Image (tube, rainbow, N blue to C red; front, side, top):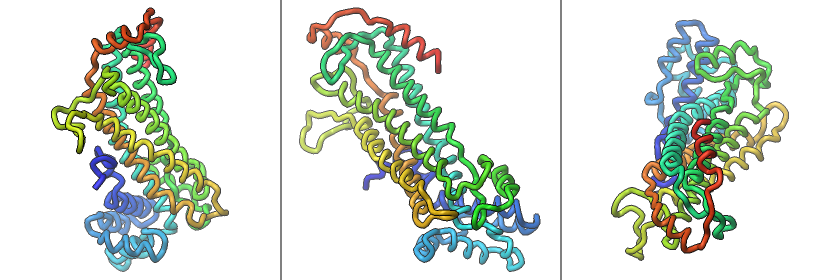
Length: 361
């Protein structure tokens, strides 16, 4: 019912059940290439196609072992010849597969997510360039302050989003392949990492949850930067302000009871998505204190939580891109609001600051 709001853009597909299944199978295939004889590895890899497996049955089987990996390994062994089955899942644990699949899912989802975030930043940059010298009333504590420029406001949006994107790109998405208690030969992890295109960690991180926490934190930071853009637009679009409005054409933003209204749909939806992400990050942080060599419940809480955080941040990015690419700015209304507020003065260094921000891109 709410997917049009919370699952906008391409990220939702990249974190769905089929995507997770294929990611786990890709990890099993990479593990086979690292450990099994070549012929067996090829046979296992050939079987690792999501469409060959009963997704509903695997989901149901997860309830018997607190992970979908056990049922998947059983099904994969049944899908290959008997002499090959012994090489499936060689020396790995369920957590090895789930953690590495989580990193693979994240990397694939981030491709779509960052494309929309970059698009939002580019749209903000275009607004900054176009309105470099457009005066607008600055507002502090929601009260009239001094004049500034709309270009500087847009440059601030751009810079915040780009800095958050840089932080997200820097998160190390690494293979997890430590075996039962974390002392497996690191050559296995290195081989799996090379095949999957993930980082090769110094040590297994089965109870070191810095990586999932860093990913969750970076998603929350980006969601917050996007929410700032959306919040400003909801305020600028108020009827009493009227300095900017969303595009989208007739019929968008309509009210169920007030025909005269034109609600800022993209801004509201971006805020609705972004507001949920910090709580998801907190869930991942709360699971960082883990018992000895395998936690009971903490890492199992991460997979769905990270999926939701990726999906919601991706949706916020898609909404923000839509919002900024279609934003309609009203310089005449900005000038009128300055006059009504009785606020005068020069724009200070706004033009130089906009230029500085645009050069730094």
